[in-house]
Image (cartoon, rainbow, N blue to C red; front, side, top):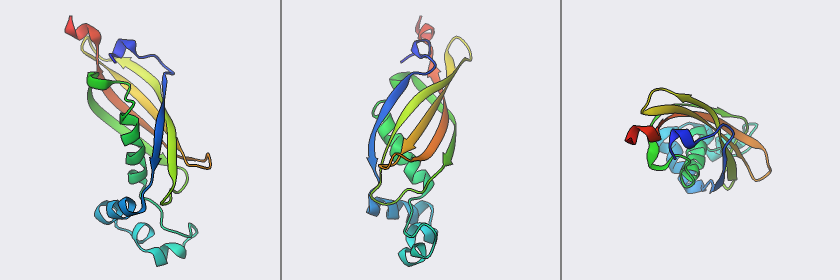
Length: 145
C-alpha cells in the first residue's frame, strides 16, 4: 500500500502467535542467555515462578504474524526505528494476539513518507503484554509517475 493510501487509525488484526517452549529456550540460549529465560530451577525462585520468554522473542513472534497482514507490502522501503515496551511476562505456551494501528504519517518528500505503526499484543487472558511503535519508510505512489 502506498503512503497516500494509508490513513491515521487504520488497523489490522494480528493472527495468534504461540510461544513454543523449545523455540523460546533456543532463542534465549542464543540471544538472551540469562537464568530467567534458561534456568528452570532459578526461574521458579523468582516472583514469576517459571521461565519467561525473552522480551524481543515475544515481540518478534508477534511481528512475524503481523507481517502476514502487512499494511505496506512491496511499498515498504525500510525500517527506521522501533521502540518496544514490555508490560507483563510471557510464558511458554502463551498465545499472543494483537492489533496494528497506523498512528502517525509524515510525508518526507515526493518519493516516500514515514509511517508510525503501533502494535499492542495481548496474552490469552486479555492482558496487554507488550506495545511497540515502529517507524517505517513507505513508497509514495507519485514516485512511479
